[in-house]
Image (cartoon, rainbow, N blue to C red):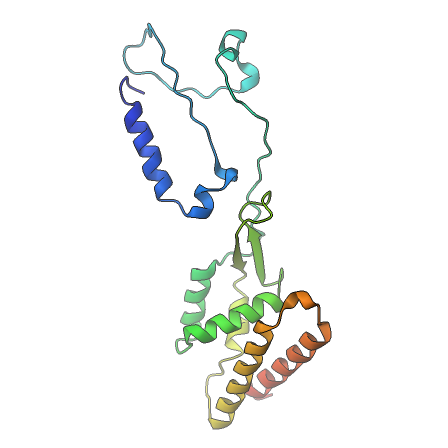
Amino acid sequence: MKKGTAGEVFEFINQFRSSLSNDIRDSSQYALKLVLIELKNHEGGDAIPIKFIKQEELTDEQNRYIVGIKNRTIFRDDIREGFTLDYNQLWRAVKEQIPNIKHSCFEKIKTYLRVRYKDKLAYERQLDPRNPKTSSKFYYKPEIVEEFKKFYPPHIDERKEEILRKLEKLLDDVNSKNTTENDEEYFDNCYAEIDRLIRILQGE
C-alpha cells in the first residue's frame, strides 16, 4: 500500500459493500475488520507490503498493537450437494422445458413442490445459521423440473383443461394451508388427489 492511499482503499471497500445484497452485507458471517497502522521510518520507500500472519506467530512486540481480536466460529457454506439451482436458474430451466407455462402457475407449483419434497428436491438454506431471525434461500435439484412437467402434458384438450383447473384449485388450497398445523391426513388426501389428476393428465 502506498502512502496516502488509505482513502482510496476505504472507498473501494465501501463501493464493494454497496454492491452486495442486504442479507450478505448485514450478516456477521461475512464480517471483517481492517486496521490501518502507520509505519514510520519504513526502509522500503513509500510502498508498504501487506502480509498476513497467524496470530500465534506474532512476537510480543507485535501483540502489543493488536486490539479487539475475538474468537469466533466460522460457518462453512452448507449448501447441500446436488441442490444446484437457485430461484432464477429454476425458472429458466422450467421455462426452457415448458415454454407456455405462466409465471403465476410456476409459483404455485414451486411452492407446492418445495413443501412436499422438502430436503429431497428443495432445500431451504439459512443465510446466517446463528441468527434465528435470519432470512433463507431455497435451492433445488435439477430433477425437480420433471415434477413441473407432470402438470403440463404435450397435448391438452378440453378434458385436460378442466383437470388443470382442478389441479390449480388444489394447489391454491394446499399452499394456503398453514403447514404448522400438522394436519397430515389433510395433506395426504390432497397429495393423493393431485397424483390421481396428474395420472389422468399423463394418460395413465
